[in-house]
Length: 111
Image (cartoon, rainbow, N blue to C red; front, side):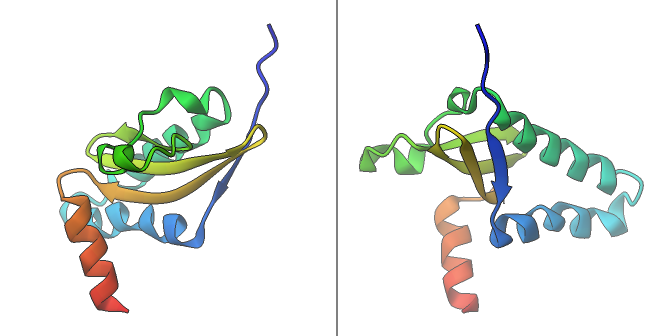
């Protein structure tokens, strides 16, 4: 059985999101910051194979769109979309200790 590799594409928002853990850790644990970012990026890039393994985020189950998924690199949630048979789009990297609703409201208020 041949497994097709999909391209993994990061949105601008997700690329900025992945920098947040490093920014928070620079003061507390500067040597760990690059390691944590590497783990998040590796987990996201692993979606090139079997992206359907992620779960539908609980907050999105009601809309019935199973193309939206998430995997975790605790405590981080990687929100992505299986865009096609050849492409996975990373849309957000969120702190799983926080409510998604709070994160979205914070983003709206910043605009």
